Amino acid sequence: MRIDFHASPRPTLGVEWELALVDRTSRDLVSAADELFTAATPLLAHPERLHKELLRNTVEAVTGICETVGEAMEQMRETLSRVSVAADSVGVDLFGAGAHPFANWSQQQLSEGHRYEELITRTQWWGRQMLIWGVHMHVGLPSRDRVLPVLNGLLNHYPHLLALSASSPVWAGLDTGYASNRALMFQQLPTAGLPFQFEAWSEFESFAHDQLTTGVIDELSEIRWDVRPVPTLGTLETRVCDGVSNIDELGALTAFVHCLVVDLDTRIAAGERVPTLPPWHVQENKWRAARYGLDAIVILDSDNTEMLVTEHLAAELVRLEPVAARLGCEDELDRLWRIAEHGASYQRQRRVSEATGGDLVAVVDSVVGELRTSLG
Image (tube, rainbow, N blue to C red; front, side, top):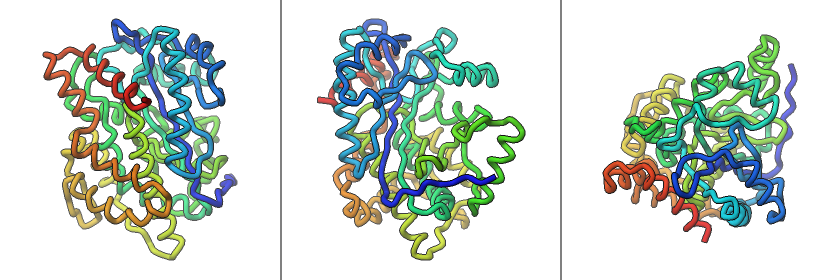
């Protein structure tokens, strides 16, 4: 099976941000996506930048093809500022996190569409449980033959991305003890989770052929890996991050992904063989980051070197400074350290819960407030 990769001559960016809709009083989820679309469409200069998702309690804001992180964030800000006005008229708020702290998954309504119905028909209980939200970043790559080596190298930073974005500690009213419950829940779907670490594009083509032939998938987009090639767009898509609660953190995480991908591609193009982790270390790092967040001790290499994720992050941010300067995202990348200093969303949510005696409505209030404040 041949899969053409429509290479991008420049490291362009695209960002997709899933957001939940919550009631202004009860703070429970509301299946109001249709109403919000009706109200928002006349306000949007680019209506195509707002999408419906699997559940009617969710919308997804997307950018166009952007040259810089700053351009992508400006598009997000413009779209969501107008969507927020529409949300006011519908009586809902936008909520950015990996999971809602107390909503009942069994009461949520599916969006219309054969694709969604087929997913639930196949995956049943686990599919219906997918009351989770994330952020996806696309980076354009110029060579098909470097896509998989870049993917394999990027997995070394999987725990950094997950720990920084982790925002789903509470599920169905209970603190799970995890920073990101979403990460481990999503991997229960049959084609989701960590990617296979292929060396050559032909191996990916062979894998896709087997999946299509045996009916595991009907199209390539149903390969829902945490990091995956998107051949039709000519991008590598990173789907590691939990839902994000404010646009500054979205920009910081996007800058990190942009710098990492461009750095890896540049080094590989120059003939460097980028070190990669064995799959068992990648899997363990994912679990550690999901469980412990910014307190995770991660495995750095095949020699079993370990380090606190924030200590390694500090060194990586210094290493990536020249790349960020070249890409024009120095300010956004610099903001990444603020997450480590002031606490990721899972930590901020827990602080609100502790300060209010476990009031999960107050937790939702705090997450909603972060987004409103960041939009200005």
